[in-house]
Length: 271
Ligand SMILES: [Fe+2]
Image (cartoon, rainbow, N blue to C red):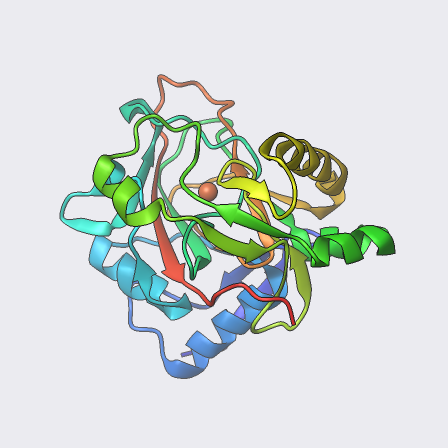
């Protein structure tokens, strides 16, 4: 396979990758190069892909084993490891900054989205560099965060979670608020504001207020890549050092369908 061409899309994070066809088997050197590029750039965009569900699952496995998603009512019936993001079926756009599935002991290393139907305007996905957010904090606050952990469960605000998913994925899991990237070696701020029931040593109300304040202070335009979708885009997001959010600012009479795969990562730790 020809070498990959990697072109940064934003000064802080995000890169477009050319020279790979994800519908075909990806050889070992290319898999390694893609994993390294993800750790370095935190969001990768591969354009103009045409993938069946089976091809998409094979391509996603470059970044780790696909893992079950806990809103199982939205999974593709014949390919349950692919979740459908489709707001016309009753889902709301996830407009709050977050990282995925922090209620798992080994949360996803990456979230992968494939643009199947794209509205004519709006409906983008933003990704924030939480490695840069960590570096930008004052020393005292970095030290404070390094000593804190969150306790994570299913989102408190989602009323449509199936009982079987609550039983499987509702057990509280503790994670550090700063984690070391297993490939890159750098640190990033890590939490999910609505999956964290509380921060260690803090009440739920004080925890929510502190996380809200952190998000407002940390996520500035300089550390955000905004992805404008084109049909056929594959967007790979490194969940170990970013947060992301959807934008519901599109004409809801139009269809916006993304296929989502999450792939297994390491247990977050601070070293
Ligand atoms: Fe998400």
